[in-house]
Image (cartoon, rainbow, N blue to C red; front, side, top):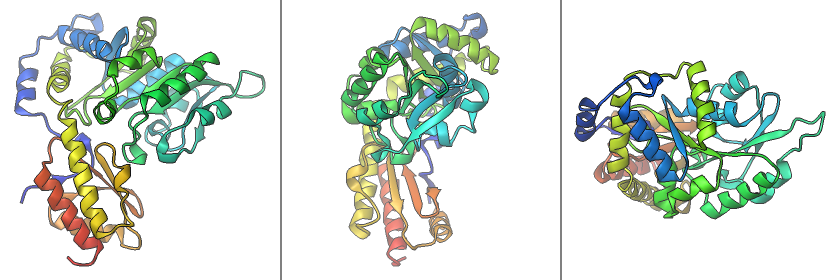
Length: 344
């Protein structure tokens, strides 16, 4: 029986076409800015999202840390949603490297409103700790892949810019948002000051993220990347995988979204109070276990070669991706439905 691994979209393996592109990549020393494949990737990513320049980094967590180093100031605070990735999953990197603290605001489905941001931005008035950066997550991981509409991002950014504060978007899964919303990706560059997105999640590449922003900000980011040990040499083999993903793996994200909705509907039909089908915008399904034992569910699924993630003692996360087809998603959802209803 084929394994159905729904723990995360980070578990994907390079496709045959991607491996071929990696093997044939033209490379150079990127610290000298001489790797042509990385240069092409950086330029293309920036152009696609409407920014001036780009910078390839080993990971999204490093990119988030570099943006905080570049756009915020030590001894100040970054305003973000309470369940943001930078707060929950990056091991205190913002505090350790950038010297910032977080002002966290809980928001419905993880999406801060204009009113919430305006109410929580703190001015630079001693001895208060001023806000020097607003960071938004697109899509929002801990809220099931929820999507900021571009109009909402633009309204927030406009108000924040009026206060002289930059806006960062942790766009780890921004292409899921673009596909789900049909918003114009190139408008990000005229809306926010900097963002980054991952190739190693929904796009299916093995390694890497890219930062995009204004040319001067990216130059500062390049210095910070070096200080953090992120300078790479012949990394064009990785950039080739990322370029392949941009060419072949964006439009197919709609398939992942459809598979997620299929699983949500199967589960909602069996246990209507445990899954919110309307909340499934992209490639994540969150399932409330109620009183059912988490270890029991995970064990029963694993026995049938189905792996899912736990996001708490009573919550499962199912993430679709290019390594799991519709048949596998259906099998996983039907098995989970039987477990939750005691019909296994």
